[in-house]
Length: 127
Image (tube, rainbow, N blue to C red):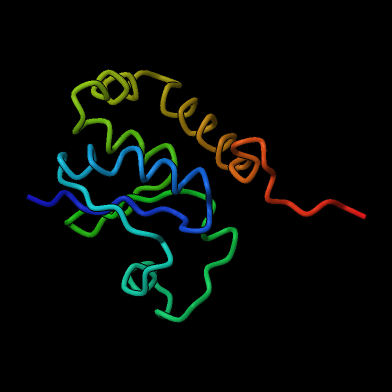
């Protein structure tokens, strides 16, 4: 039974590596992985299929559940963790005060610096 889709930025090296590493596990858990840039995904997000997503719209991975609900960033990780046996402690911990906030902040830090993944920064040198 499909639980939904894990959506990532297809232009992000960290996201692509994450997808390559975790896609088999996510598939076994009932998730399909797709780029956020996929036409029908953009339409579900409220854009036209030919809309070019901005950096703000690509700032975090998302989960689209089979019931149509979106989760983003740290909340997406928490949502996925409940379906993976070794991720359940993270899911349970997220109900403790401050833990969901901390996971969200950690996710935001990684997402802000994702273009420098692998010691190769995607930002152009300022001249």
